[in-house]
Image 1 (spheres, rainbow, N blue to C red):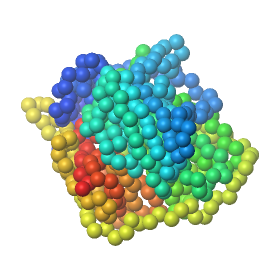
Image 2 (image 1 turned 30 degrees about the horizontal axis):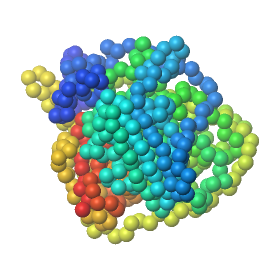
Image 3 (image 1 turned 120 degrees about the horizontal axis):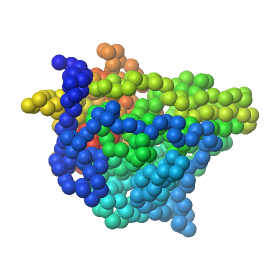
Image 4 (image 1 turned 180 degrees about the horizontal axis):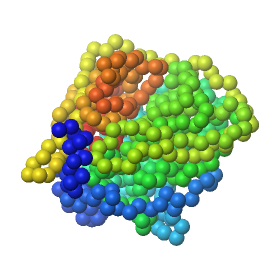
Length: 498
């Protein structure tokens, strides 16, 4: 039986798909209410069992609010020092109602860290949650022991200081979020995520005014509370009914002349097929500026990815930034995909800096001398009338005590990643960036359309993508699907760099 039909028939009969729960799910999490990944499968509900708050309950159409900036407390040059505290806060998202959230420094989203290439960064992390947590510096080239791996969890009530130097050529758009073993999905969907920009003093786009758009989604029940994951959330990844920009519903963003927008997809699982009704110029991806500007009508931004674009043609206009329908082949009984309005873009007259024809040179890392093969897969089975499901990497579920692949430090590698499943999965690797060589889909091989650096890339069902990469630090690295519920259920593996 086809996997998707298998799930449909099970749910149609009123049978919940029971997920393949790893050993960590049996740990007693009663201190924090058995939320998220630790809620045992028998407690899962179908989406239809959970009345959700109407989308209109959150106000829309207000002016776009800039991100809060994390203050640098250091007085030393080339030093960035600050504190991030993860804690529970009551937030009034809906007038007259309090929504308990878990936030960095009490902010939605978490504060923006801005530093320069060459800076020494020192972040004191204070964990006031009832769960262990970490801070993973998504996309940043930091040493493994500073990257918030699951093995380095900071206990509830504990503290840790992350220290790392931002190397040359690391300018780009990054973010940070928790990465503890098992509890990552819940900690992110309850609000823990923040932003990180590494700047270059030789930025070819410094003449452009800049705005930041952090796109996230939020699920609220009828009482304005953040509910636990349902069976469909665990199967497909969690998507809320609210799609927010900088924590706002459908804000109005005023763009004078031509401006630079940095856009983050900080959703747990939502794919964003971005369109604004007029062409824009792509100038940056996960790892910073691309080699040459690319004019586009739309861009598929998948969970974990970031882009930089230039928008505005000097003519006053009002446009709608939308996430158009994208079919990522969800499983089970789910609502049909619809176009979603993200924001109104109000273009006005203003400065029109010239767009450089060349932005940077991206080296291809040199000749590859090693190769890795990675396969994402999903399995379904039935035992005594109970459906079970597992998300796997190379046929195995994540094990903290197992090294799945071994690489040599500074050795250039080609990775061949195959999505052997019916569903889209975004591949993410820690600690480095990669160049996409080509992809093979429906037996058609296509070279990458432009030279860019990535740390996250989407794979369609049965697509193979080849990348070139190199790890520059000895230690343990994670690679996984960045649909957080899939990662949390085992679609993650470990690379030992020696």
